Length: 311
View 1 (cartoon, rainbow, N blue to C red):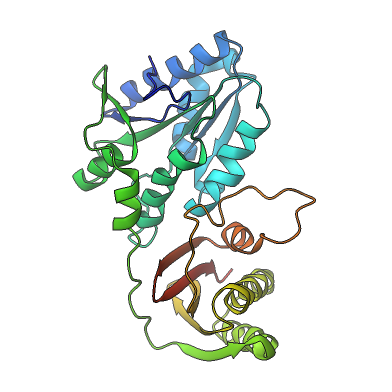
View 2: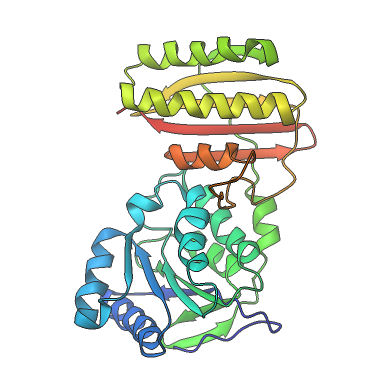
């Protein structure tokens, strides 16, 4: 598999549109084997069943590959860049790195999908200038045509049916604008306004509501941290006050903050955090603890919505 670059950028981000398991395994093992033969670090982050297909096909040659179950590590698309892709690439800064990352699969929910597309678009910003290749597979059998079209918009190169071509639809900034969607008004939700003095009140309010909705103690701990970070961000960066809402959706508790601030950095929350870093951890921690995070930001303000399982 060749991996052409665009405009001299050493970063390569192809999408593989595959049509059956045979094509999937052939292309994946070729990509991994080429990296192993060249002495390059290789990571494979795909859903569990596909992970086993590739690992079995590689046999002993895959001993040095890092195998990652994307259904677990990438449950929230917002944490894939810092904790999967950058974590691996940053461990190997002095050599070319190969990564397979499959963030979109049949079974992703309607709420999750926009975050997946934003993730794919943001990879191009996060790795610009880096000597890294990230190959992203898409199952043409199971995914809607609109999903495949979005893959063409978020990847400068598309591979399929044994051919590689430059995508004429490539427009990651356009994708980010298109998926920066106003979040639908929540259903009947418990609501509280807060400012700097009322941060403890907002946190206690959220915990009491979530406890009443059946959230377990472990997840209540996660919710406590998420609410603390989101409300503090609103006070510090969002004009000094905001509104917190909380409700249940299926097996998840959703908490949402709205404030008058605007997020200027599209990669906010996706930058890796250094152990010695002071500040700047808020949205990273929210992404790390949540099962899904959705964000809408414009001149009128910012809404951040965190989904956390009850158990």
